[in-house]
Length: 431
Image 1 (tube, rainbow, N blue to C red):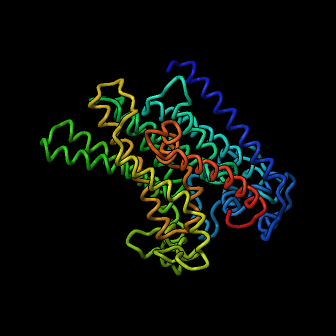
Image 2: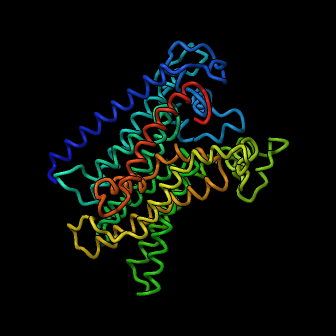
Image 3: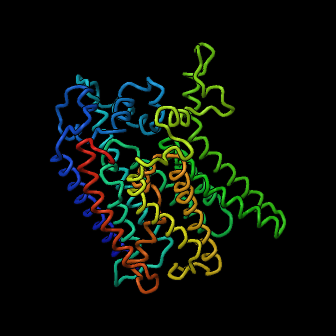
């Protein structure tokens, strides 16, 4: 496809993005409030109605923490990287007389919109690298990017929540990882792309705890390299690659460790008495403790009869995650761009797609066994393979056989996004 049509598709994506966002914001603005919870009102008087409608649920924590820093233990469950970004940007806007964290709320709203748009473009460019496209029909990259705009995360990608920033950083990391994998041979540029990919994923891990799952991309590459060494023997090139991938994996881990370390300095120092229980763990993690202690997260703890409706809410997204991962692991690579040497490209593409499916599957396992299952609808925005499966099913219905399922998935995304927006703005569950 020529450059012009691709740029034309990007322009249309921006128009669709702005239209959908405007629709959700108007819907949120017109939604009844305050709902059954008055937490937002208790923060103080709100002069601007829109931030008041979007600072709901976790957004209250994000905005308040960005305004005055971490104060209570349970606040450390909410993305350190995201709240720090809001705090830094808000500091350039001067002081505010409002008790309500209005500056931080507006900064969060802007960051969410900009991050979401960047992730849409990043997904489009990454998809262009991987999939063959046709000039006479809607392309898979274009369809996948529209799906990300219409993500079931919905209004969470507009409110002061970490989901948009997480998907932005993750997709930028995935894009660098893809570009590095598609480069044949060794080069400084390829190494730099891997390190840049890991850096983006480290920032994502500091933003949301599930960002640590992105390290599975580098673990899978390390296993491939190890198998290659066993089959063909060790060499300088293979050893270099294994060390590089190991460093990248450690970088992702550091993104998760830094917030835990900062929390331990505050709660686990010798001056603090008595110390909190999590300080005595071999690997102290305030995040895991807070999730278990304050929100009752833990192995099968969410498996109760009253929570059955929430499991039903999670079925569509969970099913799409599983089905798209099966597609990746069983695909025959038809439709993959083969403009580079076929053998290398086929192998690299397969490894990329399989690696990107790993965090999806790991998230399903964790969500179903340990966490509050309904949050998978908003966490889904940060993963790519399921968008590609739906887009592939729509663009090649005869070859896939799941066209109807894909269409139903889109209807579900739109309807759920609308209902969720109203519930969220009205402070009603299960938003």
